[in-house]
Amino acid sequence: MTELEEAIVAVVTNHIKKIYTDIPAKVVSYDAKKQQATLQPLIKIDGVKLNPIPAVPVQHIGGLGWTVAIQIDKGTEGIIKCCMRDIGTWLHNSKKQTNRKFSLTDTTFSPGYRSEEGAIPNLENNGIQLRSNDGKNYVWLKNDGDLYTSGNIHCKNQSVVTERVTQKVKFYPVLVIRTLI
Picture (cartoon, rainbow, N blue to C red):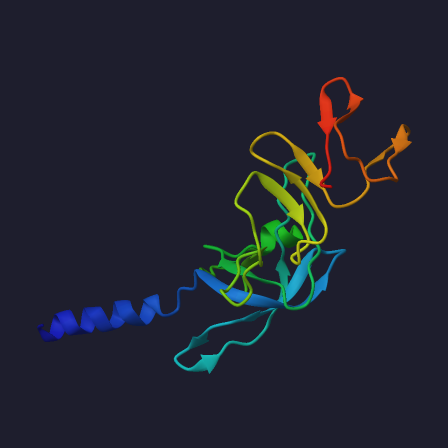
């Protein structure tokens, strides 16, 4: 390499080191009202542990009228996503936007990404499940269309099932519910 090429590589490498993208992290604390967390990045940069990042918006999957909200506890693993630009204008409805790019100051958090150590035990790859990590509490819609639950089914203003159901029961003309025996 020529001296010019080496200089260009050094400059580009130095700038790339300042660009943050996705970083694994754990929740240190969570403010449910603001839906923001203080996060501890789980990687080191050049052998140096990164400081906790405060007030990071936490993702709950949803659209305009519906949301899947999950419990966020201290220790929850996930991925910090560093935004391309300053998110203060969007987050706080502020008027002034800085020129920051890919900064640890401008991050969001997606919970649920897990390390091998934090992997969910006995996770079945069949349909969709709402479940506790230990598998004791769940609602499970399997690929075959059957719905299973580990608990009681409560129908608002209709009825409450308080005994174990062992056969198909029609609550509505098009809804069939069955629980595990």
